[in-house]
Length: 136
Image (cartoon, rainbow, N blue to C red):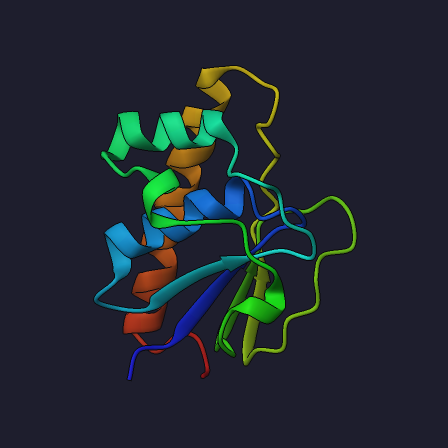
């Protein structure tokens, strides 16, 4: 059975949504990807939606929505995106903080850079899971 990974942010509208989309695209053979927050937004950050569609062909408006931590299944791995505040508490067997800056309100280049960092971190996480480097 594949482990469940939750990407966690406060508002679940930008970085965590990007990570859920890229996790499903890049690592669906290794883990199930979810995202959530302690608060929700009426819609996902539209700059994030546009950049993920431009770079990866995924329309997050069609595939995802802003969710609370209580709205997702129990997870094996919790990844905090870098909340810069107290992140939501999620019970998991493994937890890590990726410390990514929120690109909200910044240039498209910042969104592209954030997407690239998330992609690399997801690939690394998938490899660590595959090779048993994370105790689950």
